[in-house]
Length: 458
Ligand SMILES: *Cc1c(COP(=O)(O)O)cnc(C)c1O
Image (cartoon, rainbow, N blue to C red; front, side, top):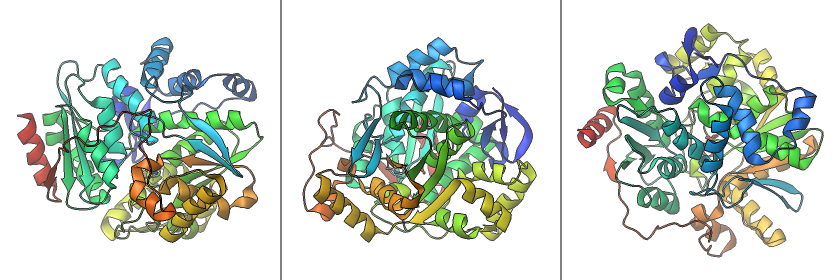
C-alpha cells in the first residue's frame, strides 16, 4: 500500500515509513492512495466475524504487502489479550442510548485500542532493530498513558510524553506517571495541549534533530491509529443490525471521528457523524460556519477534548477540496500566516453531507451524567456525556451509536461533582496509582524539550 502527503501528492511512502514518521515532510498528513470499498457480499462476510478477525480484515487493507495476514491476526490477538472484554468493545443499551464502550483496555480509554496494536507493530516492523527509536508524543491526557502501557520496557525504544501541566485529571496523571518502565519519560509542559502538540510537530520538521534521535511519533495524526479505530465502527454497525446508523463522537483532534469517515468511504452505511465538542469548539464552528480559527484553549471538565488545533481535520479537507494537495497547502499557509482560514459555501455543504456538529457546555455535561445515573444507575464519563448530549440534539437522525471514550473512574472528581458519589477503581485493571509519580516539569519551549531529550538519551 502506498501513501502520500495531503500537501504533496508526489511524495510516496510505504506503510512502514508512515508508521514510523507520523507526520509527512513539510507538515502534511499521510493518506493512502487507495481506500478499499467493500461490496454488499463482502460486508455480509465481515458481519459474521469476531472482533479480532474483523480487525484483521480491515487493518490488512492498509498494510498489505508489508505485514502478512496471519501474522497481523496473531499480532492483533496478542494486542487485545489484556482487555476485559474478549470482544474488545462492548455495545450496551442504556435506556434509549446505544453506547459503545471503548474503554476496557489497560488504561481505561479508547486510546488503548489503537495503541496496543501499535506497540506490537514497533516490534513486528523491526523499526528499532539496529538503532534505538525515540518516540515523542503529546497528550491531552489519555494518549500518554495508552502509549506508555504499549511501549513500556520495549527493547530499543524510549518514549517521551508531553502533557500540559495541571491541565489533565488527577487520575489521568497518576496512571501516566506510575505505570512506566525505565524507558519512559513524562514531561509536564507549562502550557496547553496545543503547545505540546506544536512542539512535537516542530521537532518532527527539524530534519537534523529528527534523524539525530531517530524520532518516531504515535499521536492521533499517526495513520496507524486511525486504521485501528475504523474497526469498531464496523463492529457496532453489525451488532446493531440496522440499515443505516449515525455515530456521535466526543471529539478533540478529529482522529476518532475521522476513522468513522474512512469507514463510510469503505462502504459502511453510516448516515451522519456527529462531532461533539466542549467549549473548545473550533470544529463546531468550522462545520457550521466555514471559519477555522483556533482560539485560546479553555480548561473544561473534558480535558481530553481541550484542543483548538484539530490536526486530523486536514485529512477531511483533502477530500473536501477535490483531492487537491495544493489547495490544502494554501489553506494551511493561511492558517500559519493569518491564524485562520475560511471555507466556501459549497465546501461546507459537502462536509454537512457527512457531518453534524454541536457544542456541549460543562453544565450540560454534568447534568447529563447525573440524569443517566438517576434514571439508569449507570455512570458515564464526562467525554462520553458530551456524545450523549450531541446525540440528543440530533434525535431526528434515527439510530445513533454514542462512542464511550473513557471509563468514568479516570474523571472521578468530576463524577463526584455530578452525582455526589465516589467511584471505586475498576477491578479488572491493575493500577498502581499510589506509587510515587515520576515526571519533570519544563517550560513551554521547543529548545527546552530538545535539550531535555538529548540529556536523557546521551
Ligand atoms: C482523545 C480523547 C477524545 C478525543 O478524540 P480525538 O481522536 O482526539 O478526536 C475524546 N474523549 C477521550 C476520553 C479521549 O481520550
